[in-house]
Image (cartoon, rainbow, N blue to C red; front, side):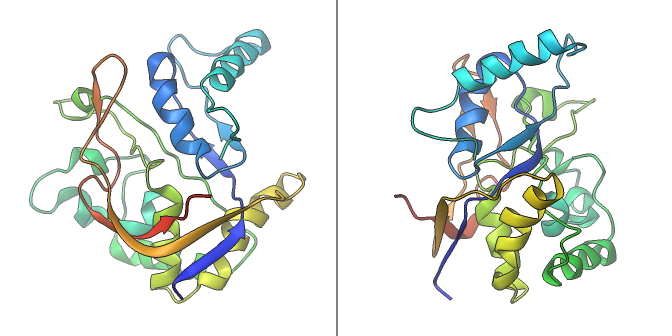
Length: 220
């Protein structure tokens, strides 16, 4: 299969952070996901409804005009974190597990069970916060999330299960209507950039930086 069209998916677990990082993280998610559950683990913390609504307002303000809100464990195991030296940009929580655990997850999603659905856990940190003696956990996967999910399902010969996992099971679980729009991906290789620069000049290293992805979102 060289092309696939699915109902626009949702991301049911991710982190946008705050401040100038929103101008990077929100559009990166909005390019391919219609809705998202955003983890408001900020500093200072969100501790009441007023702060939550203020945070939502800042997120919406960073959304590109005309767009909507658009896991590493399927792709990686602990060898990708530890072999040949620690790879700080693959460090996430929960920590990557054995290859056998990775294969169990891949088998589960390939089976099409509605108990599993998409949540990227995209969690950006500035490069310096990842590459130090007390590096932060989290992978900024939004830049290539849907493309990499498609790549995994293609490798598993289960592209027919991708739409359920990405677009239906989460909405059904939360009792929400399924999205009506669609997104098309084509089998075309591209390279994830080595870094992206925030308005402050601070670089972020995206997940799969410098690596080739086999699927690409077809622009409308």
